[in-house]
Image 1 (tube, protein in one colour):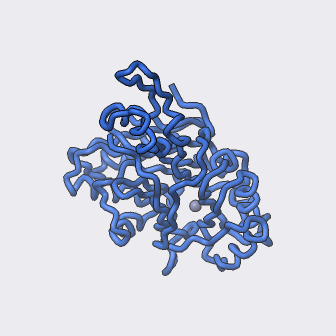
Image 2 (cartoon, rainbow, N blue to C red; image 1 turned 120 degrees about the vertical axis):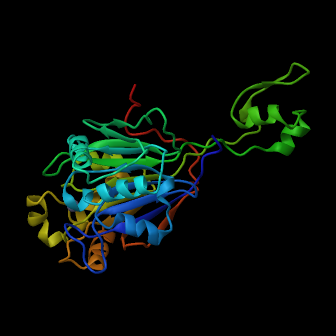
Image 3 (cartoon, helix red, strand yellow; image 1 turned 180 degrees about the vertical axis):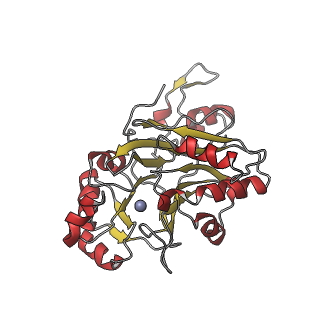
Amino acid sequence: MMQAPDRVRVIPFGTSAGRPTLNRGASALAIATDGAWVLCDCGENAQITALKAGLSLSRLDAVLITHLHGDHFNGLPGLLGTMGLEGRERPVVVLGPPGIAGVLEMLAKAGSIGTGAMPVKIIEIHEAGNLAWPLGTESFFQVAFHPLVHRVPTFGYRVSLPERPGSLDAEAAVAAGVPRGPMMADLKAGRVIELPSGERIEPGRFVGPRRRGPIVAYVLDCVPCEGAVVLGSLADVIVHESTYEHARADLAHERGHTTSVEAARIARDARAARLLLTHFSPSVEPEALAEEARAVHPGAMAASDLSPIEVGPVEVEQPLSAPTTPAG
Ligand SMILES: [Zn+2]
């Protein structure tokens, strides 16, 4: 595999709660590098929005479904069918809550989804963990997940790119006698090298600290909960549902949702750099919600369909640990 990319674009595909409106589609959001992307949730207009965003389905590595409510899931059968029609043979990974495999298998049996030669690797998640890419799939994206508190089993996601080697001061290394070529590459990769003279050189002498990749948390749908903070911990962006303004907190909680101000508290507690509010009830004014949220977290903004934000390269040099221990 080549060197991992160091930046992502976060592209909201649909920012409405429950049902689409003229300006806002049902929940879906892309996290994309130049060469690949993952889709978080798949509301019914997601595949048309992917076309508008210029993202090719052939480069889609995985679909991460939070829960099986229709406004987050109904676009998935159509999306899989289109990839099948396009003749894709590379497997696609679908992650989701318990029950997702049964629903997709039933639809496939009824003839609703023709995926042709494309293997669909469905992974049902039951508890917090990290995605181990199944055999036959590979991706730069690192994906962690954690349960959220909603009316049905729901998981939030944390999508990141791997750490990158620190920058190499090649001139200084050459001056110290390191030949250009494989030895220099070893040094840059963080390995100790031994010069022909027998001198051992530690990489730290010429290579800066490793840099972590961008981190994006995706937290839909839920009441304010611990899982949201875990997923958003030190993230560059936390995408959080904000179904109602804070004055309707009781209604929000009754329906398993979060308000703008509560989403901002989550982002603040997680020490996330930015907060992207989404999943707006058609009855709210998203800019007013962002205004409320900014009183708590100055990095809050309201998401709009197809208005991307850029994340990375990350300036923080020390690596940050993932929220959960790697599975297996
Ligand atoms: Zn929803």
